[in-house]
Image 1 (cartoon, rainbow, N blue to C red):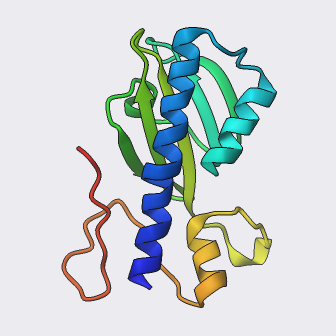
Image 2 (cartoon, rainbow, N blue to C red):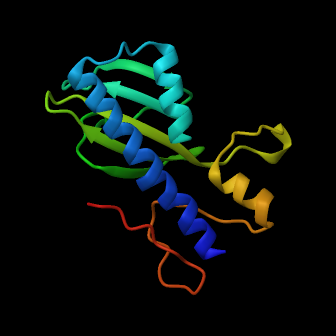
Image 3 (tube, one colour):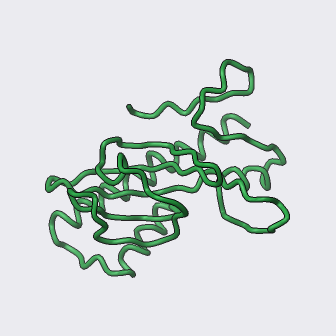
Length: 159
């Protein structure tokens, strides 16, 4: 199970997320494409992310596609981290970023955990729910240090 979870997270973080956010900053830097809804939607579909965004050097939104619940952390908008996991009471997101030479930042946001009451019947499309549906195993994803245990896997981020 741990191998499957690792593959799921690493796929988003490296091969999909990083590739797309780097492409988005290249397109923005070269003015090679109009960042209309369709162009962003296609990039987001390739990244398989919940949301895809581009922020200017002041952290102001330039372009957006997708759904994100809650506030995007400042460290993400300013490109202070290449990747970051933010765990909030209802939702947990993994963010992958890339910075353009002008200081703008492209962001792919992945909904990793949704903690809504089961009685709502809401399919949020988060990784932990999909993992349970596919494997029958529940996983708990948290930003807090769970300590040392046999069934704990740490996602080591760049910083």
